Length: 272
Ligand code: AMP
Ligand code: MG
Image (cartoon, rainbow, N blue to C red; front, side, top):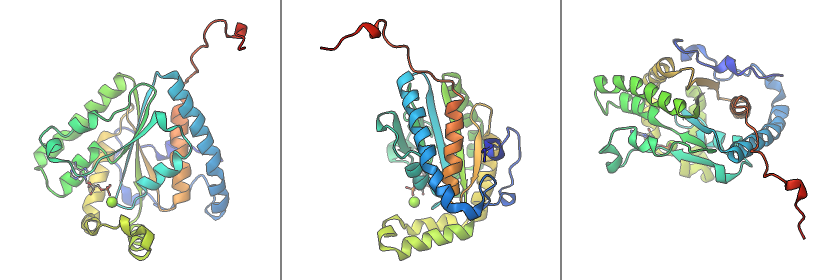
């Protein structure tokens, strides 16, 4: 079935109500056909691979993918699956952790700007400048007057990147509180997943509602023509992988890229 990515788009100006978006929904795939859904992913990975090669070969566009979610929301898994097989030369993942002392001694966009993609590059932000209006807001790391102003900075920062040639796609992986519990529990129960468990993750979990509110404001305030947000139902990992792949493929397709023209006279070249 054709995936209509607009289904997930937050239209600029829309007020998002996350409680009204079913985290298990699979509008473009029959949920009973999970195995077929999984088996379809390699086709998308291959298209992703060729589009990314074209992006790199052409060297004209810059692509920024922002990924945000609650803990265990599937950011790492999405990156692993969606970009499986792409040429590592042209793709980079930038993960934003708790800021260092040096980072904290600058404005919050300082560390972010350094990681944006250059010509031909695709960069995935695993967390991003949005943490500065999410965790920073909920944990009250700065006062409200200060974080509120950041919506405006962020929109203008992204406008500048877009004006200068960056295509921006922002994806929020929407999981339910129950699904998070299952995933965190699996990190406790399965020895090879223990390394992923952080007791610190229970703190944001306890403030689930406040985080959902903060995400709703982010989605409502910062989805623009030039840097749109997409909300992906992400309880079902296989569907999430298909949906995120489709969004990136359709976005890259829309760039109308072409391989650079070959050198003149290649047809005369004889290699002895
Ligand atoms: P993880 O993604 O599991 O490696 O965790 C990264 C942690 O860094 C999360 O708890 C984030 O909330 C935190 N973090 C990221 N950016 C910021 C920020 N700007 N201020 C405070 N904490 C942050
Ligand atoms: Mg974590």
